[in-house]
Length: 149
Image 1 (spheres, rainbow, N blue to C red):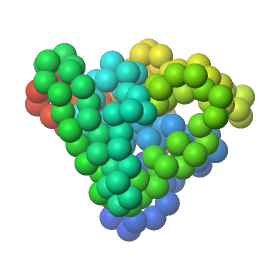
Image 2: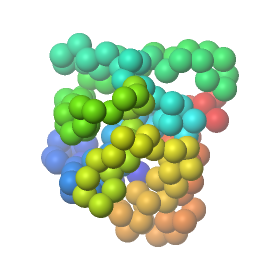
Image 3: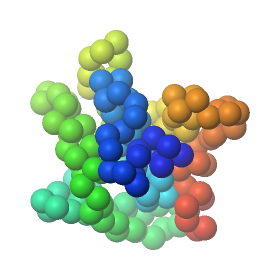
């Protein structure tokens, strides 16, 4: 799914427009690359991601397996997506949760809830016009790691 949304081989721009789907792209990158559960995506906060210039270091704290995980992102396309998303975040948000709602062409301070993350694979599959999009569930994010789900 991530390769369909991101043209990784040719290092081209993401196919879905950023004005509407930027959060979906960042969630897809974080969810699929890190094999995150919807709970982990929901609880992801600004203070667990460290921007080191040409690398992002993400520390996912204790999860269902009671094991903290640390990942790095070195792909420039993914780092740029994260920075673009962060730059659009309103300054007046009074919490540290990474993902906030984007509704009616404007950002809110409301953090994205767990059920929204559970529906995102279906929404992404629908955007990509994949067959049987309703079969893509929140488990699509964490299938990359055998112990993740």
